[in-house]
Image 1 (tube, rainbow, N blue to C red):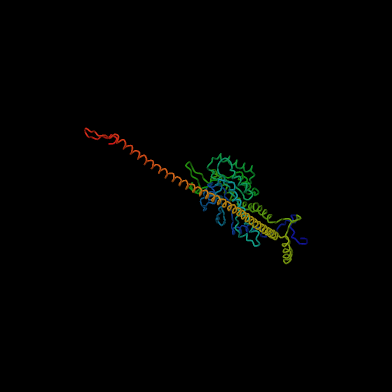
Image 2 (cartoon, rainbow, N blue to C red):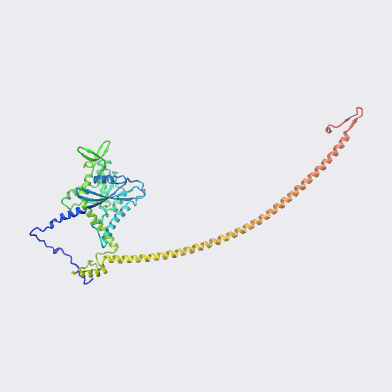
Length: 473
């Protein structure tokens, strides 16, 4: 870097005030900026964070005095979803491209621990998209649709007690990324005394938990007094309504109840007018500037440091791009400089190194995977062989047991057959013995009867009548 000419930066001591002797014309610069801004139009992005049914969509409709197409949300979503819708609004000759991002399903899950994470990821994604557009060699930021969130309207449920742990956790995660304006939705559901105590309790909890909310700027004398007063009114207790009724000669937005009506734009009823005045009429441009100069710059600095960009060299000397008087020399010098210490070259070099390291790690992981796969396959094959051997051994044992059982079965069948044969022979002998015994007994009985008949048989010689015993008749 030695010998490279650099452009000297002007010091404050080099400034010298001069007076003009006549009209020059650069006093019309503000008018030129106004005309250019009117021709290009403006963009404003609002993030609405709050539980389902807290009045987010109705308040947005009331703020911009229109009806946006916002579908009805359900309470049964498994996770938080962010729904972004962009509209073009025109008031007089001013064109505003308004983007409304609604958190659908926020706080409806049983486990609310990570409900804030999709919101943080969405905000970072918009910052990253803008940063990538800035890092392009050929940029078109003038035509780029800036989707960075300019303000977060955080809706607090009107419980009258204190902030929920989910509210504290979410706002603590968002306060370094977006301008947070806390509002109490549906503030007409609690009394005025309860509302004032609730506001004090909310601000006390925000301070004790070190949560930074957006403060309306007080450095501009024209609005410093009003902004200071409005800083003391936060969080704003608001009421929104899509219903209009005629009061006097004017149609106003109201909420009707059996005991009366709540006028949305009546400052005695709620802080809706204060919120609209501060958000849209007075501090919209400051919210845009704070988003770019504070929150985006913080994200950009962290991301560029991650990419390897530095403001100082190895010796803590400031890094500055070289310049030369002539274009060819400047071109050559800038080329040589860029080839050594250009942030883009540094980024590309680090990216190449990271990519090579990633490829090396991927190759190592592949080799480890192949090696582990081979080991697993070998282990599975060994286990399979062991199981097969064990199965064969068990089958052999089973076969031997089966043969033994078959032998025992055959022996048992033979014994049964011999027993049956012996039984049959015994029954036959017994039947023959019983038959012979019966025959003998029958013969003896017949002889005995004949003998008795002969002995008892007599003939009455006088009457010549033969008598037989009674048992013979």
